[in-house]
Image (cartoon, rainbow, N blue to C red; front, side, top):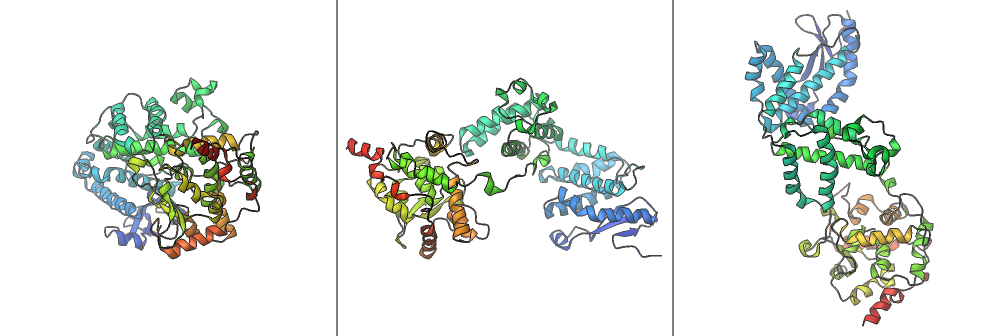
Length: 530
């Protein structure tokens, strides 16, 4: 008789079982993990058992990854699963099992949710092992699975501090609004996220929120129509009516918006659990639902050479029509630094200076004294020094900064809660450089941020600058190292300056045709004001 493969063996009753060796790196993480994970195949027929076991070998790792992305969680779950199996085998009744094992699970450590996940994981393994025999219903490790899962949820629910859902949401807004970048985030939570979720749940308490409620919200968001209040066929429909409707993909909100909505509900539910207002495990179905279908660098395209010519050799630049300094300088700074719009618009005159050690002129991106200046950076990596391109110096940026009598470089740009200092500049840029009366730039998926992509592409493709150095200079988290931010050695700043000054847009833009800043309308107004 042929010997059985390592993943197949008979138990003492002659029933074949599947065994999967637990990876060594997982067992090192948890001494409680057994050497093998074993389940019954519920057959004494070797041929059928071998077929099932081979199927499980292929499926086991994929199923494990589906339920446990974190090796530590997998280790903890397998430990709880073994304890659960032992408790069921040694209990005379379900009530005894509940008293001796289930009631002792630590809800604060998420053990109830983890055990449920482990049982569902084992159920899928068992169902996979039974898939080769369609005439038989899959046998589960426990005949009381539904009773167990219900008891787990009821056990946790009995220990939560349940309050009305509306009351919890108001508390969530009050506690989190100070950490949001603008007030529209809170408005979006109330008018969109919570409004839709509340329509699905009804007037319930937080302890009664179930996975089914969260699942319904997810299904709704995945088909939610955009601008539905303006579309006759959708504007009067409730969330539940929309859930039952067939909505064409072209009418739906974008993948980015879908992901934002799901993430925001997840944040709210996580806050509920953190404050012991709901049961655990409600957000599992919201993770990794939306994956970007487009490559990151294609989400916002760079300008073509013709686009750049239309922009910087437009009549505004060549005839001096810019009535305010930011209109002349912000696009030029964006072209040669790749800085984000708000990073440029919030600059102070003191942020442009000659680096003490290297003597290189730099633009300092920072959030110094943010309570007073209202300057901001989204992440620590955004703080950085950007060498000033010699073309900007030639165009008179340093001279302009030194002639400015105010603290801010562009005092005409006022602060707005929604878009900060960049609000006015963004609006002007879009209306000036995308309409037919002016530049008529019609390349799809382009905006001011496209200038950033132009510089990144030039540095990477034309100059072959190492990607981690580009990321650091552009204010991104380096994929291969640690950001040095604003505190860099002179030799590093010199290297950045060397790369920046090799950037050449002369093949696209006739810089000689650009009227100097002193001949722009805003400069004439400055002279007249004096």
